[in-house]
Image 1 (cartoon, helix red, strand yellow):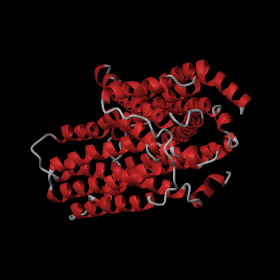
Image 2 (cartoon, rainbow, N blue to C red):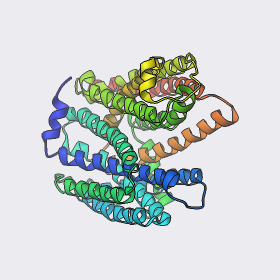
Image 3 (cartoon, rainbow, N blue to C red):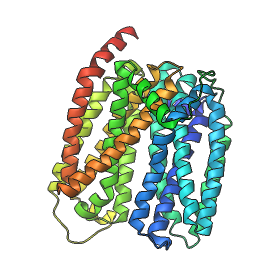
Image 4 (cartoon, rainbow, N blue to C red):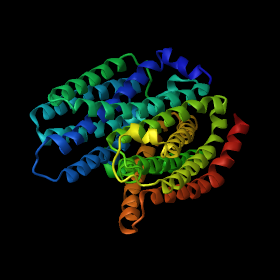
Length: 437
């Protein structure tokens, strides 16, 4: 594997940004998972724990509908490095509120902090992807995006696991409060080293009418070239598929593999390491050429469907054990080995699928529109993730499908959706981009 993408970690134009965004993802998931575990196992609120857990999910994702458009506008009007520093400073204040809520056992403060962290992420997301083309050369975009995706997924996993570890302590509130504040402060300090990234459109008027600005930014996203608009849809489709797998993994482990919480951790680790591996492979597979990387998208799509079908097939062949077991017992039995390989394969081809999409959106969007177009993609991502939850509820509840059968449906849908996207948009435009590169 080419080492060029790893050399970016030794460059000031990338490393401070990478640390800043990775710590942000880590802190989001550390706080969110600690809150969920506290609601389930530590706090007595008088309300149903399941209801509160779903409320947490809603409070975190709602800001992406409300404020992504504003984030896109801010990222065009102001210097991105300064905006990132302000947002990371805001994270420190938000985490101060969250830490106080955890220490006091104050549910209201904790939920407000969660909503504000979602708001922070909604504003930060468009800027973090739009800044890359300003600091990286065109042949570095794939490697830079690969590192960002690798760092993000490993940070999500690490934050969730670290939260679980902290929650085993009797003094969990003090430890969680300390670490969310520490990570926020370190993230802010790292952001101070991000090089200058001047505003692309400093005279852009800000629209504070959120529904109107959201619709305007969505129209801007779909008004892009066929390559960019299809890439936005394909990107959101990835989050649709990923959300279904990630949401169903705990129930899949319990009902199909008949494992305990330790096996959930193993499965999530396999999936995350698969994503990281696939992401890092993209630069070598494409020869560091963004235009050539478009050819990896159908490869990733086919791999996602293939391993989704295999996961359904191998899950159907599992013999019920009759009792829950930990990960070590299940690994020793060897019966679930194929399912483990399938989950790693899903992550691997997911990484191969998603990295070229981000690079194409960044490279083929005008500088003065890039942040707003990425914001449109974030809004679409949130819509697709909500749609994935509704589909899972419909198929598992009303239709009575099993979880492996849901995976089968998603694998087949993935083939259909990507066939439409690829044959009607990405293939033709990829050829024209390659010719003009």
